[in-house]
Image (cartoon, rainbow, N blue to C red; front, top):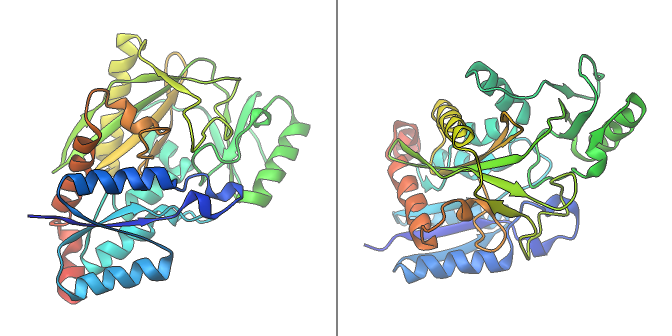
Length: 324
């Protein structure tokens, strides 16, 4: 039986400022659509909030069984990756990836690091700076980044800060653009990344890769939508790989990650940085598909699809199914 897919997306090429860094490109959306259609499924691609919500309502009224792909990233909100999961759960409609709670918690780097600490997963010392607070109790050098952004948005070589004067200037510039700022003590060593897949409550992890990139910082300029400037290297020591795999499973099970996620660590020994519950799906420039090595792209999409359809049978969808 065919599955109807509604790809809800924000298009990278539609905007020309830094706030679209996490939005998907035309080439990625085409690849996703073509792959799902080649599997025999039906695909509708749609963007903009009113259009997306109206289409979900229309399909729901027609009693169609369908899956909404959460590729809507939005901007300037700590809730932005939760828009689609919240709407879908409210209406009793299946969606890809994690629920609104897991999306919000993982987008919030402070909340994620607090959870890591609770789970005895080491993370660098950190502090959140709001408009009414000031840096304290951290040892220089520190690293400054927005709390609620991904794709290295707001990150450049000046994010590594060695003194109070430069710290205040950097924090001020980030707050004006993005709001709350995360400060964490700098860690020496390699960047590590890992993928997690979930289906029916069962989890699997990819191999751990070292992320190699030019320059001293894995910054916004490195994360291109047209090519992959960084590379994944498979030279991770066995002990490091095993502990990162165990920590990632522990974190994802606690948060309730569904479908797919990618987690980042840094240092030797490794320390947790963040979890991305909506990692990019580009075969060209996204780390997540490449972490699964020999797995076909179509197989990866099928796993994400099936996870979303299974998850929609959970009790959290019951209200939307009965009262929408």
